[in-house]
Each structure stands twice: as C-alpha cells, then as structure tokens.
Length: 206
Image (cartoon, rainbow, N blue to C red; front, side, top):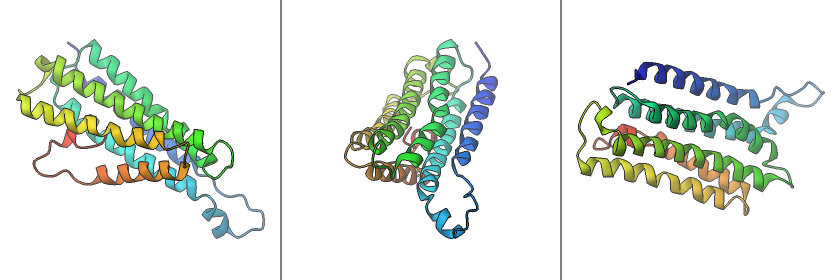
C-alpha cells in the first residue's frame, strides 16, 4: 500500500494553485482618463465568477480532506481517481475566465456558461466516483467501519449534489446569467455548516 501523505500534499498543492490562479482573471483597469469606479464596475462578471469558483474549490478542498481522512492507506486505483479529480479542478481557472469574458457578449455566452457549469459537473462527478469507490470497493483501507445506512446516506448526499450542476448546464442555452446564478446558489448553500447529524465529508455538492 501507499502512504496517503503524498496524495494529500500533492492534492493540496494543485488545489492551492488552482484557487490562486482565479484572481488572475481580474484585470486592473488601464488608466485612460475614465472614472476608475465605472471601469471597476464593468468587471462585475469577473468578480462574480471568481467568488463562485473560489467558494466551490474551497468546498471541494474541505470535502477532499474529509474523504482522505477516512483512509489508512491508498492504492493505485485511488491515486488514479484522485488525479482525475485534480484534472477537473485544474480546469476551473480557465472556465472561470471564459464565462467572465463572454457573459455579456452577444455571441458565445451560452456556450461559455455551458462549459462553466459543465466543468463543475465534471468535478463533482469525479469526486463522487472517488468517494463511491473508496466506500464501496476499498473498505479494507478505511480507518473505521461504516454501517450500510451511513454509507447510503453519504452516497445519497454526494449523488444529489450532481443534479443542480446538471440543471445549470442544461439551462445554459437559455440564459448564461441563470446558469451563473444557479452555480452561485449551489456554492452558497454548500458553504453553510453541516447539520450536527451529517457527515462533514458527505455534505458538500461535490
């Protein structure tokens, strides 16, 4: 078996880089004689997309910690699923920049919104696949035993988290603004602290 320490360290590094790169999508307005406040206000799509993506990546980091903390060791299959999860997280700075750039454009805004919501759905799906694999197929690597009821509850909460992102992506052809709003609501909802009876690692959307 492989120690989980390196998996955690590598994952934290990738997530930290991804969440830091988000701010690079927010430009400093050039000095061209206009009012700074107006130029800053024009960049509101960048601020909105930044906030949504930052909170969402933060949630996935919290949940990733909870998921990995259950493990005593990791094997090759878990490492590969973790790489797929990190691959999806690494795309988020680009999809965030994409929707910020095209949100108010007459052409391309719907596709940009679909890609943005789709990137969240991909990340949530990758997290769900890894979580399910660990709890269903790698129970011998867990630090504690889980009864079937608790396993079903964790699986149900994570599976349910896929639905809002699928809805957001499906609505992108109708309104890019609605898609961004749904992603914002999801981030705000899952940023709330879990109820006492909930398993923290099964709480967030991913």
